[in-house]
Image 1 (cartoon, rainbow, N blue to C red):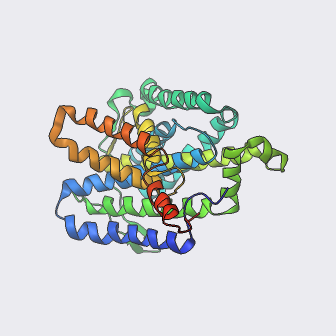
Image 2: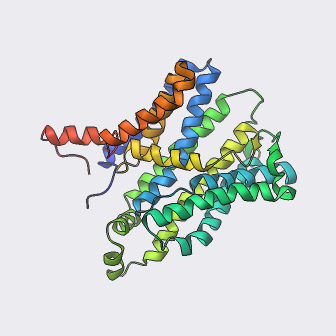
Image 3: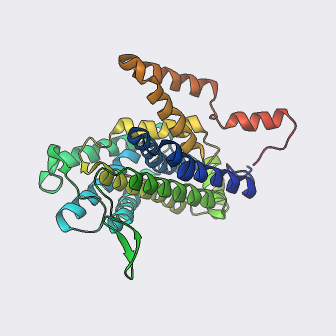
Length: 333
C-alpha cells in the first residue's frame, strides 16, 4: 500500500506552512478583537490535537473510543498537581501526557488483542470507567464538585530568559497561541511518524497482522506503542483544556467526546494525517453557524454528519484525490 496521507514532502510542508500562516497570522489580524471567535478557534485547535491520537489508532486498524477517558486522566493529573502541589503548568503539560501514555500501555497490552467492535466496546468502557473513578474518589478528585479555580499558567523561563510570559486573566491570545503550537507540533510529529518506517509498520498491522507477524514484526509491541502515543496526545490535550477552563470535572470529557473525536477523523479523511484537523474545523464551524436554529441545532448538525459520512466515506479530503485521478494527474500517495 502506498504511504498513507501526506503526499509528497514538498506538498506536505507547503500545506503545513499554509495552516500555520492562517492560524498564527491571518486569524489574529482578522479576529483579534473577537474574544468569542478566538475561543472557538482555540477549542478547535485543542480538539484536533487530541483527535490526531484517534487517527493513529485507526492507522493500526483499531476503533478507539477511550480518547476522552485518557484526556480526563491528563486533565486531572494537571489539576491535582497544579492545585495541590504547586507544580508548574509547563511541567504538568508533558507529564500529563506521560501519565496517560503509561496507563495506556498497561491497559493496552491485554485489550489490544481484541479487534473490531470488541475493542471499540472495551475502549468505550474505559472512558466511562475514568468518569466513574473521578466520581468515586473524592479525596483525590473532589468528586462531583471537581477541581476548580486552577491558577493560570505562569511564565516559562530557561536560565532566567522568559520564553513565554505568564498568562493574564481574561486574555485569550495566550491560550490561542498555545493551542496552535500544540496543534502544529502534533501534526508535524504525526506526519513524521506516518512517513517513517514505523508508520509503514503501523499500516501493515491494519492490513494483515498475521502477515506482518510472519515477516518478523513484533505485532504486540507496535500496537501498544501506537496506543501509547495516542494516549499521550489525549493526556496533553486534557491538560491544556484543564488550564484553559481553570477547572476539571468528571464530565469534562465523556463518551460522547470520544465519539466526536472519531467522527472528526472520519469526516476529514482517514487516509490523511491532516484529516482530523480538517474534520474538526468543518464540523465545529458548521455547529457554530447553526446556532441561529437553536433547539434544532443538534438535530441538523447530526444530520449533516451522517450525510457527510454517507456521501464521502473516505472523508472530505478524498474529493481532491478523486479530482486528481479524474484529471489524469498522479495523486499524492
